Length: 150
Image (tube, rainbow, N blue to C red; front, side):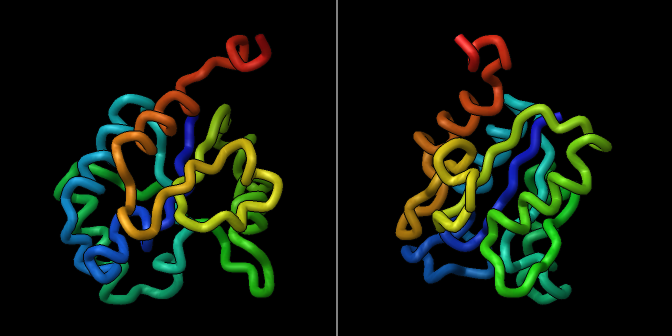
């Protein structure tokens, strides 16, 4: 299985749209949909939007439904740690169960612990998810273990 650890602010919305909780920039969702289609990846929410069931999280699920996207899971909330630590905790608990072979992190922040240099596809908070980010994510998720070691 391939997994996308997904942030929302700065990825599916941006500074340009005022970090809208309505996720009104459809191009971001279309690019996420394209990544999922091309890779078969499952989405694990790592965004602060996962905490509690707020109007923002309700809207996220509604917008996902419009694009045929599904949320598989959310990373745990660990106080006093970076997002990378929460991703590591999720992987420690579920990597074997879900047979996770590859994962990418879509986020505008760089606090991804040991995953920053390898698995992070960092978006521009001012623009959100762009085509170049989507292409990098697809390439990263679709590379085989053999290709990676060559």
